[in-house]
Image 1 (cartoon, each protein chain N blue to C red):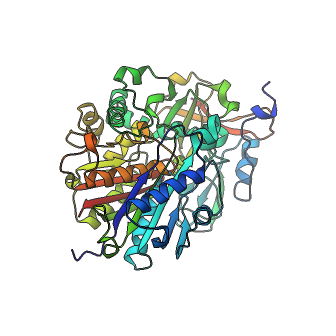
Image 2 (image 1 turned 135 degrees about the vertical axis):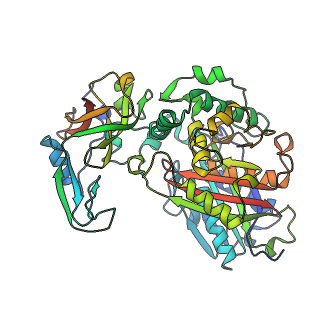
Length: 139
Length: 384
């Protein structure tokens, strides 16, 4: 029953700000923006730099390495499509390039996830969608 | 008495819990007219109306719907939608309207019937506030988002499950002393520890309720409230702090906008943390309260949990917190959750709390929080 419409997980809908990020994910790349004015990285991608409001942004591919900044093991899923995954990890990952994003830490026992744990990004294929989803797994 | 500061002239909260006969508008009506009546005024005396939002009955112009329903013709009307912070923000904006002379009596009104109106859809509705591209695809629940900060406090500052459980147990005991509380059945530390894990480290009894209910306060110009029946409570200072919307964008997982909002509110009041006699702080989770108390500066890093365990937050403790039972046990009805805290703070200063009364309460602190530690509003209230 995992491919019935009601059980499909939310599919991100790329927009003008995020198209290159999601296209990158489909190609196995974690794309982010760096501001050429102030030098800082930002996630999520947008039309200006949220640090200095500059408009001179460059897309770069992250190396895909980071650490768990924090996490929670979800035992009660908020919506039905995640119920079979529980317990699953919702984590904040600090990437080496200097930005943070949310994902699941997959391919491991949720009980082994710790703050500070090194992870690398992977791109998850999901039923009912051609969009690959950036995720993290332990190193 | 030369202060031009605004006062709270009337308060009201409806029954909370499962109210299957209620609607969003019936709760708004009862709460709004209740606060006006508490102040000894009529609907036609109210010249400012500030409302929040409803999940159960979403309206583009909720304030206009309410005003039309009850026959109110305010000079100023607006609806604010800032999640759980909204109740405080309504009061903050009412203060500005009154102190600038634009209004004399501003009704700040919150209500929703989420419990019976949304039923088992409520968690999905709450989770739908997550970012559609960067949070919702990961199954982020609201507890799992708040848990991110709790995990950091456990990892860095020694927060424990027992600390959090002590908050839940204390607030249930407080709720048992409130005639209208949603949950009064006493709980023990063991009950909290045995309750089901929702999103680590948060268990069911670490999480606030979902209730039907409503609450309102009437903010008035001081001279306009002079002859009104109830002891007016002065709004000595308000402050806000806004740092992000989505938890992955929070500049810190340790300090939040409550740090600035508290400093601003206390600064405007000309008071120190130690001048506060009772605190009424948004407690969507047990951890939220402890984290806020430390970020606000009421306790040092790692000390709030120990204080909870030592019984300091009890009504007769060193620092009474959430004397009505809070969102955890009194009730949580959308934006009204925070307004219940404001109402209880006013009742403490009016000395109307019966067996919940904090002895000699002169200064109360109320705080509302929206999003995932995203937006904060603090206020310092004083007995005139």
